[in-house]
Amino acid sequence: MRLGDQRTLGPLLLALFTAGCLQDAHLVVDYNYDVRPILADNCYACHGPDPESREAELSLHTEAGLYAPLRNDTTRRVIVPGNPSASELVRRITHKRPQERMPPPETRHTLTESEIQTLLSWVAQGAKWKPHWSLITPACRSCPESVSENGCVMKSTILSWCDWSERDLNPREKLTGVH
Ligand code: HEC
Image (cartoon, protein in one colour):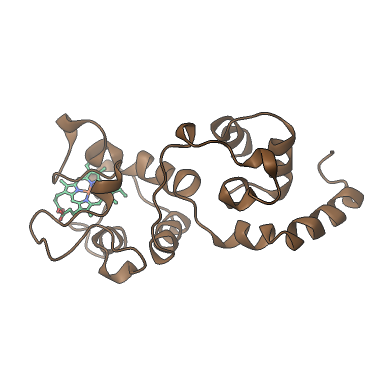
């Protein structure tokens, strides 16, 4: 299908909407496609897989680490699913004071408004963690029924989702093609 072909786009949009897919595409934040890349780019340097460079004993690359109690105040947690205001991660990425703000200003990494919004929405939606996509059986082959499991929740356009379902690409290749 050609991009910009209005005649094919109309029925396609209708079909996706009927499948409930279009709505999910705008609302659901997906850990693998939306959240993990933000954490990897901005946080893993100090809270990632390398124990040597890990700060505050905080691992944001593991499921356990994301929901763990804070090291200095075990009554609070890094993420409280469904409750952004109780989540230390949200407090840190939205903090006004540079001393508290994450990532620290000296890293010259700053989260954009939309990245902050993505993390906030993900926490508000229940902060569902997923294993790395390479460990999940692709569900998009059987689109559209199972599309909201992966294809539709990624920040891709509807057209690129279709493209993906037609061609046999893995999500990583697809993402690099899209962004
Ligand atoms: C350059 C290193 C660095 C980067 C990058 C970084 N942090 Fe931190 N982070 C720290 C240090 C150092 C501390 C401990 C000092 C403090 O609490 O401010 C910390 C503490 C935290 C804490 C509090 C942990 C606790 O137990 O109290 C959270 C939550 C946090 N970081 C989240 C993030 C998030 C989310 C990102 C990415 C958006 C990020 N950090 C990026 C260095 C970093």
